[in-house]
Image 1 (tube, protein in one colour):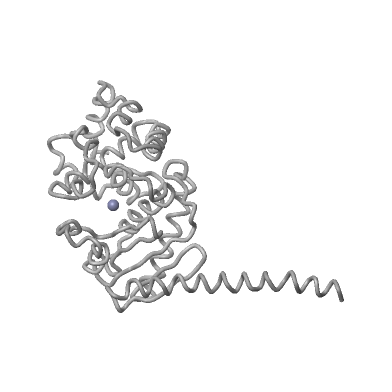
Image 2 (spheres, protein in one colour; image 1 turned 45 degrees about the horizontal axis):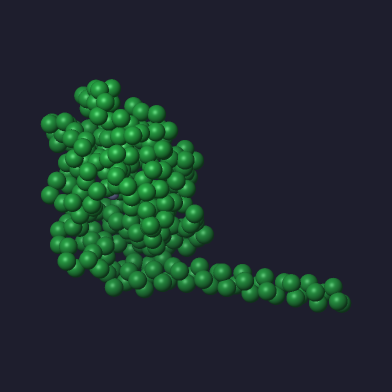
Length: 285
Ligand SMILES: [Zn+2]
């Protein structure tokens, strides 16, 4: 009898904790519904699991995104976790809005004074709340992967870290096409050749440290250059150097052009010649 009492005493708190945890989990998904309904009345919870919450206007869109995100995360965390970082928070929130305008409205909700900042934006990541946002009907696998890379890097580093825009956008784009072999996918080669006829001004790109400037007037050029530089570093340089550089950015807000130069010697002849050769090879092989 005493043993039974003891068992009951031990079990009751456990049961209470388990029920509380479940309630908490259910609560999080519905809190997200409350948060986004102001912008889109049509979305609801489609997936509510330990590793993933998906809100979408249709079951099909929600399940499709869940399948892709899980597969992509598993492969990237296994093969590139030491480079991009491993998030401490396991659960990711994916919100698929009914339109791209709604994504932009949500992203811009607290930034009334920055018109144009979100004009060309398709997806948006909020690492602080562990969530990504994108339009449901136009959800391409590429956009989903792009935002997931932002999510991984952002949540692994913590919200006090601000990576350079070229590094964030370069890596996110590099993983869009093939997560096993990140770089410039064939679908981007033509675009890059058109936009980068004049070569890559690496100094200018490294110096662009503010996001509004990066996504401003020269956004297309900046994104293209960021993709080329990140792909070059992944493909034509030892990935250990990139890991060192990402760690340096995580550790300090110091002079990033100097950090980059210390690790890569980008002013040196070898770096410049290799980068030129890489640029010439884009779209040819
Ligand atoms: Zn991005």
